[in-house]
Image (tube, rainbow, N blue to C red; front, side):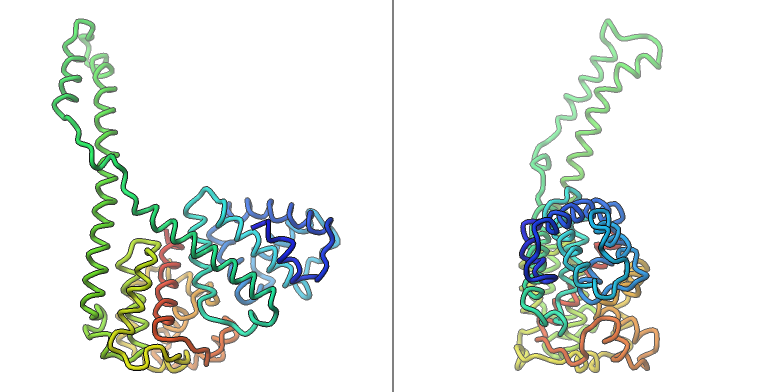
Length: 378
């Protein structure tokens, strides 16, 4: 994403100087290595700061500042008045990681959190045209990354279609053991036979892994198709079309995230939209977040927590700006549905309680939050 440096830096200053751009380019290049080295901490913090705001106690703030000051000592160490520049530098570094990182885990972590964080619009993001365009570009890159990774992890090696001639393998071991050159001592005999045995076991292991992946992909396809065809929630036991929009969005998003391999294929998102919209009147109508939450009940939220591991719950608590809907569900469960979540939510996420999306969009937001939690856990 460094090719976007000149364009995105106009968010900070309308006419950036060439020497300043060169300094920031070097800073971003060094920052990428640092973010990847401590990806589980710094990448979520970078996305959270970009989506909403940076806090002075975030480790990523000092990381960003140090990277910039290494090339420009005039850059202040405090956030006030400089947060916008930190956001631009963070966006460039995240884009570079998603575009060029060799580590699929790091690349996928950044992409999943970007999609989750920017699924719900924030007023602050539309304040300037350049800033909104930067976030849209970043979101598009993240979507491309997860779609490519989704296909890659389901691509089964041709090894699974090849058979192993077991008789031939054991004949080779037998020949090695009974050849004229075979030693009489057990240890030396083992050393003679071991290479053939090792080759056989390695061949088996490669094929078993390929077959396991093929089996998981086939199972995923069957489960998703039957789930979609039935249109019935595993959590409530009712048809999605017969439940309130808030319940349908929450349950469908969670269930599909649990069924799918991570990340899900693009067509899974289309199936999700169909499941929650099929047979529903005014399915395209936008529904405010506050109305969605009002339709939830404690049993449904508690039943849904079976999809949340301890690590996932930890990420929800640490990064509400990345996992806003999950944060609300956690807050309500902890308070036994008594919490007045709206003010705290708006402060911690920058999302208004009356922000409105269609039922399919709310379901997709839930899906991506749970996908992000699973990627973070992995």
